Amino acid sequence: MRFDVLSVLPGIVEGAFAGEGVVGRAVVSGLIDLRVRNLRDFTEGSYRQTDDAPYGGGAGMVMKPEPIARAIEAISAEGAEGEGKPWRVLLSPQGRRFDQGAAEALAARPWILLICGRYEGVDERIRLGFVDEEISIGDYVLSGGEIPAMAVIDAVSRLKPGVLGSGESAAQDSFSAGLLDHPHYTRPAEIGGMRVPEVLMSGDHEAIRRWRRQEAVRRTLERRKDLLERAELTEEEERLLRSSS
Image (tube, rainbow, N blue to C red):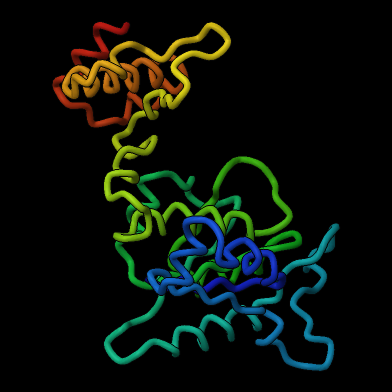
């Protein structure tokens, strides 16, 4: 899978995946093709300007459309024959909320171009004519789209075969089944008077499976009841929900 990231501060993204962590190792091994592009390489003139004052006045600067459009067109032309074009994603506070379902949808695409905004935002004509989708990672303000881009890359990459050490890890993560994850424990069996639940040390795999399901339902009910309204629950999970209510 290939990611291209377009940014005025490429070092932020490059440093985050410099051979360490799940995604960094996947990049080194070739499972993930990550190319971080400096937007200034697509500017013209000696000042390499990427922003300008907004029409209508006001505070802050707006990212110029020409360098971004030029970059999108140049990157899109790099695809090998039959590879098609990248899915172009603008990281924007106005975008759809990024969640596990969005990550799964992006994971089905072989090539994604992530466009990082900065300053007061990107010229509206980029949104209207040059991107396929806008994504937001939450209702708060960040200095730029680099952190959202990294979040998208991490969440999507871990869904690709071979990236995680265990093929079951992604399937068991929180939100993968529409629920929060169950509690996890490791050694020692007791710390500060708190013991690991006996069922987890019983060796009864079916009992452990049921306990984990029940705890996932209970935790979601307590902490994120809104998820239950959208989750596709099995009959067993419906029964567990009724018993936990």
